[in-house]
Amino acid sequence: MQHLTSKSLPQTIISVLKECLPADRPTIGLHEPCFEGNEWRYVKDCLDTGWVSSVGQYVDRFENHLAEFTGVPRAVAVVNGTAGLHIALKLACVEAGDEVLVPALSFVAAANAVAYAGAIPHFVDSGMETLGVDAEKLGGWLNEISVNRNGECYNKLTGRRIKALIALHVFGHPADLDALSECCQRFHLELIEDAAEALGSFYKKKHVGNWGKFSVLSFNGNKIVTTSGGGAILTHDEKLATLAKHLTTTAKLPHAWAFNHDLLGYNYRLPNLNAALGCAQMEQLPQFLERKRALAERYEKAFVDTPGLRFFKEPKFAKSNYWLNALVLDTDYRDQRNEILASAHQNGILLRPVWTLLNKLPMFQNCPSMELPVAQDLEQSLINLPSSASL
Ligand SMILES: *Cc1c(COP(=O)(O)O)cnc(C)c1O
Image 1: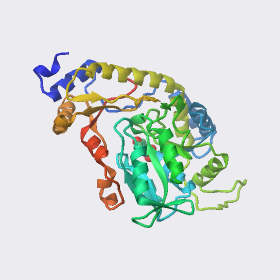
Image 2 (image 1 turned 90 degrees about the horizontal axis):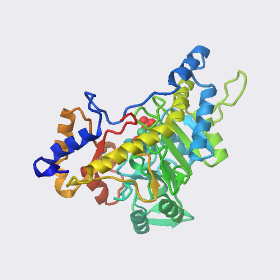
Image 3 (image 1 turned 180 degrees about the horizontal axis):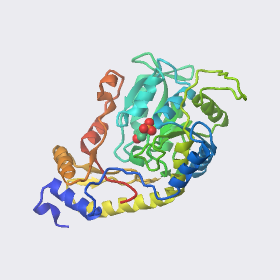
Image 4 (image 1 turned 60 degrees about the vertical axis):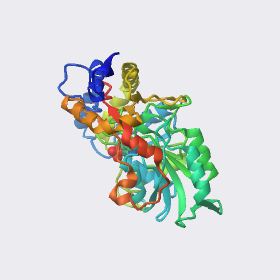
């Protein structure tokens, strides 16, 4: 391709994107839902039978489908991914005043959930190969600042216990789960996988979500499958799964009429109407994955000769769902990022930058943090491309 000789980088990117994307749409969003299966049938069934709310067969069906697909034995459907993270932290015994390690390069939900649990996010850096938490660097940091007291990890600088790590699979690309598991074991930390973006992603041939004590999925409207809003907690532990179900359904004791609750519970259950949508979407997940991987391949080929950037490819140990495709700008081209975003938007192609680093947000700016050179680099250089399965 001859692009950059005569065109600026923003112009080049737009013409490459136009080659890859349908020409007949006025605007192309970042990630749009795709309803081509039994959605109407299942939702209508809820309306026809009156089972729209807190109980109904679709919730069980949806949970079973998730467990079967991921290979994690138990799935508990909840109202959204953030609520799932909140409960996962509670059940991992994160207590008020603890610290929880969270990548600075993450969606705000993880840090919010830590705060809902009364704990404090402690921000850690990412790695260039996975975009997820860099296990080696984390190990070095914990060696430096933590101390083992009676088999628990304490931050020497703050005096607080460090209880868990929330590892995110960024844009669906698996983090290095073996290395992160090993690091968590070494420092007596619970591992929670934020797999909100990673349904359909595999690490060394096994679905993500199988390494954490808990893993959390999201079915928000922009995710690979949607229930409009929704989420799920995955776990290998039967007892904890039962407790997760209990806690997310107001901790009500089963009885024909009496209202008794034995714990401070939450109304976090996923309504049957949403689960019906989820069942129809899960039936189409294999097709969505195929189409999304084909789109990623198209982008990769189209951008191969474009100087100034690279297309982000799945780590070598992974088979990713390519939930969001991404370009990484070279150092010398980062100052053009906003220009690239602006001219793409003018052309109806709704590119997006990555999240603002969580340690910069006003409510988290005084939280503990390691040095974040890679996260800072990525914050400046990542651009997400339209990634809907319908493309
Ligand atoms: C979508 C998402 C969540 C959960 O979001 P909800 O909207 O609460 O379902 C959590 N973490 C990440 C990284 C996400 O992308």
